[in-house]
Image (cartoon, rainbow, N blue to C red; front, side, top):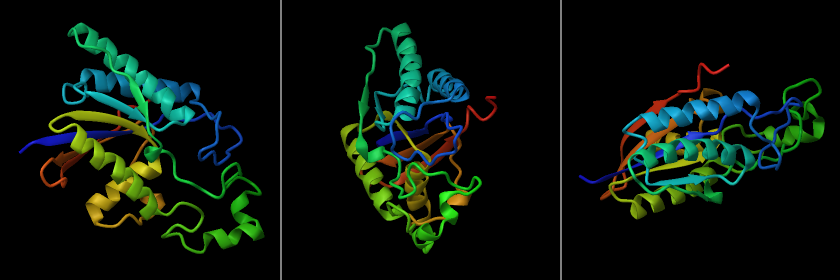
Length: 219
């Protein structure tokens, strides 16, 4: 059986002292801690023979994912140079971007947050769909389009894609439970974590799903 591995990496912590829901807004960069997280995960990937064999690197185009992918790219290319291999580059792809959210730019859950304002309550009528932006089905569809395309493009290989909590977990939940809808409070996708899914190239069905959280202890 020929398989392709797709490692979905979440970005590191974002500098956001105002607790704004930044969604796809520009100029939300990694915090100092987030930079350390990205480097910790990058070093973990570079040191793991099952991960440092990646032949392609992709990223959501947002600042926080690009900065995380830069750290991973640097660590991987240092390792590749030791073995006389050509350096990798990063390719941006909108299909693995953050979930769309109608609360973008607003404060959520802090003081007089946007959630509690009367004219926003209507956006919360369906937590399962959800009703405040891009649906889980839409998210899973676009991430799946990206992943299955890469499974076809890279048979027998390993690729890495830097994305966001909601897209990663939504797609994983679809694979494991058969539905994209889920309880957002039950996600298991830590900052700078790695979710590696191995696919059978013939059937495109998942063979295994592995999870690593190398930046969990970063302070």
